[in-house]
Image 1 (cartoon, rainbow, N blue to C red):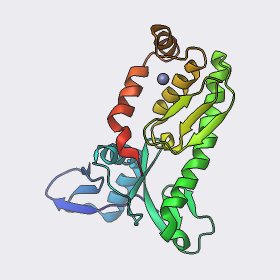
Image 2: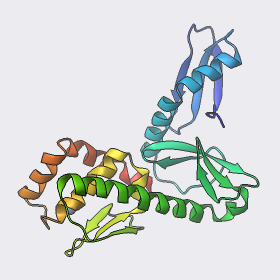
Image 3: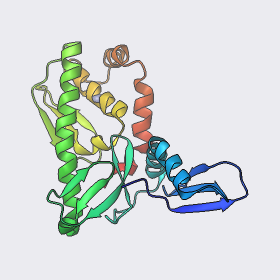
Image 4: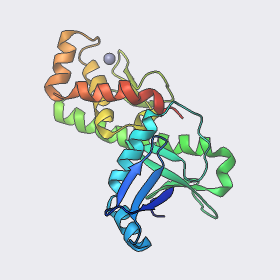
Amino acid sequence: MPVKVDQIVRSKRKTLALIVKPDGSLVVRAPLRVSEKSIREFIEHHAEWIKKKQAEALVALPPAPKQYVSGELFMYLGNAYPLEIVKGQKKPLLLEENFKLAESVRDHARLAFERWYRVQARQVLTERVNLYSSQYSFQYKRIGITSARTRWGSCSADGSLNFSWRLILTPIEAVDYVILHELVHTVFHNHSRKFWNKVETIMPDYKERRKWLRKNGQQLML
Ligand SMILES: [Zn+2]
């Protein structure tokens, strides 16, 4: 399914413009004579930009319960994808260019999303943890996935790492920051100067990434 356009406003302007409104809806401003096909091509050409802008809009909104209705935006790795309800789909939930929810599980949409996010979280987080551990010689015991709403990750005294599946909603830069933070805790079990020095040596821009989480994190709860 192509990008969903909420409104096309035609006027005497000369060029096409895309506007993502604060609620994430997409408005196209178009000259009077430009064809539907040209508008469609213009939108497809800017699909990535639209996803980014919609993600920014979404995280800036006050947290509200999800309705699980067609067109509603859901996050994955920092991008916003609209939901599509699909008849006759076998898998409960898929992510292609949109999130596709089987109509048969509509009443359990929240659960379908949580399961899907958990599977992705385990896969992506394991991969990134292994990447950072092998590159910077960290030793950890195991990875657990939690539903925590108040902390993205933790590291126990024995070197077990826990991450909230909700972390998978954030951009990969933020995911990597949380992973590195917990891995450095396998060496320094506190937030001492040595701890932060180690984080900064490996990830010089960690403050930016942490800032993103602090600013947007609370909006990402389902
Ligand atoms: Zn910490």
